[in-house]
Length: 184
Image (cartoon, rainbow, N blue to C red; front, side, top):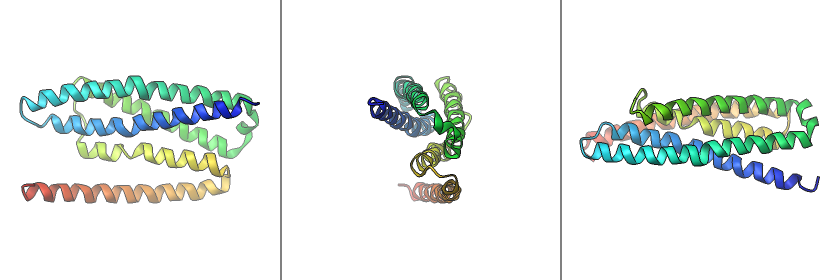
């Protein structure tokens, strides 16, 4: 098992780059939605550039990273099959399945914006953008703490984080609206 740490390192590297994509892609969605409300020629220029950036991020970084993180995770489970009998790992796998659902929904949103189909507000996307953060917290705590009892505290902490993020988003929206009203 001398190569275990190399596999684990590669797994973690691709988890980091996968999450980088999941953090930034919805941010590009926000910019795209806001650009769609601008006047010509700014609208066309921004939308074209944002589509290119989004496509490159999604297909060159995010999808390959998701696949490689999963490949190395499966490899680790082959090396350590006893983990599959531990409650923390089963819960972690559940969160990872939810993360893939989030990823696939984000992919659907990506495809819609590539076709200039705007179905969500920029405010919704700001909230959606925090989804990856919640998954990251849950998965990392489970991977590090490795305790079925502690995961309950982790879930409660994650719920607290959700409340905090929702309040922060609402505050940010109010500040933006106030700034716009003042002509800034």
